[in-house]
Length: 615
Ligand code: GLC
Ligand code: GLC
Image (cartoon, rainbow, N blue to C red; front, side, top):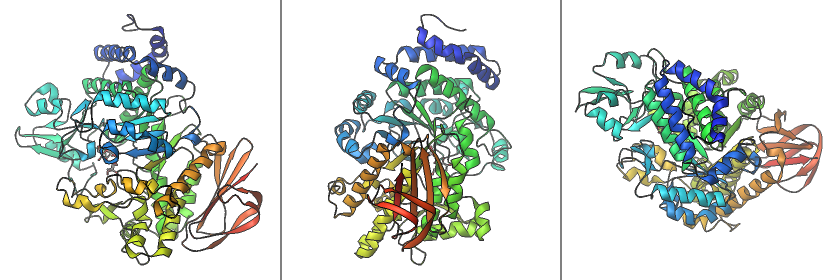
């Protein structure tokens, strides 16, 4: 085994049990380049050595149980540091609010150095080892992580690995003509090969950033840019890229980051003649990263950002013997929830729940209603075909519905990347605005406001019912509305995702304990749900669950079972009263109302729900 010098036994033990597989995979991708492999092992060894004692302690605990106390006790929140607190130092002073909100997993949106104008919300990194000046320093990040750990909060940070900013030092050198640096990207002299790629590679931003390649006028070359023209795709078939990016990942892990979000991971391997998404090599690279993190920093969890159809998502968990990501976004469920809001028909959501119910219990999903990105309509159209719904018109309906252009809809969303050619668009908006709260406030319509608040709470309750880790987008806990100010900012105006990335409104938060305010109603409801969830092990990811027949297309029933607890959950997605059947006689206590329930049918109010525990 390479480079054993002076490494501690702990490192060597972890390395030894993974060495053969790591070497095998590396040699397969990098053509038996043992010199680079030895350099990698040497480098990860030094990251182990420089890891703080406190983090190594966490590592030892996590080796047995990566999710520590059980997933039912975890609640996440995601936020842009500047929007929430201005900078990292101020954020440290605001941990009380985060704790009060029941949050113990905090995802800070990209905060590493990136050009101000061409930043894609922080996803165009120009220096992986430096924090944006306005937000603070690496030292501040490390201090924040220590303070979070003291308070039982885990920190998640993005690792934007598919590309760098055009202002990264590698990109600058490549532009200046350095061939070694050019090999870190995909550089071409003419459009021959790029146009071959374009035959099979779809577009991520067809309207806001069309094309997969960018012509560089100053050096007369063409570079691959899957996302924006200023985000240059890294070439992972170059071992120097892999080694250096692993170093960058471990660097942030050593700052005390507990969860690393692998941004846009399906895109990291490119091959002519394919879609350049989800290629087998991507899985090899992720598996290697998992092995490396298990060797150096086993308490660090990998969260894969795989925004794809279900059959593409699940393979990123790997297999029980050869796991890849610890966690993945439950993206299909998220999109299906919004489909259910628009149609008020739970059949597709029921089908989706059935599909995930058979997955192994150690596959942990990150559940969310919305994030910093758009909502894409990746639904099971084959199944919807049974109800005579087909893809293009159904997407149009959903987009009309959530932009308030459908009769009866109270949603205020905006389209995202409207591709007129294929009649396709995605959607943006905060949870509250999509649920109709904004419309009701504008119109001063009390009845509508009550219904919309109930809808918002119902969706959160449904998210809390799912196995995995629920993550709230900062501001949603106090029903924050859309922020239209981005329309006036030339750097943002073209990107409607800024609609739901507004500054956190502390005046709204000040009303959080006032039960008569919208903010209080949402905030206190979520707090109550979180508390129930954390007090009952039946909500853990280890529980089994299945759907229940309710004899109503508006009411979804889910049963969760764990040790001696059984939980019957019912959600009415209609905006009017609904009678439904329990299917059989059940008795227990509704944890929401506190009432004892027994019988075989029930009626739920508009957007009403229940969690009936029977022990
Ligand atoms: C991820 C991010 C998104 C960004 C893209 C490119 O998908 O979530 O915001 O635009 O990566 O880095
Ligand atoms: C697409 C990509 C996803 C990215 C998003 C950005 O959905 O698949 O990775 O987050 O676009 O809007």
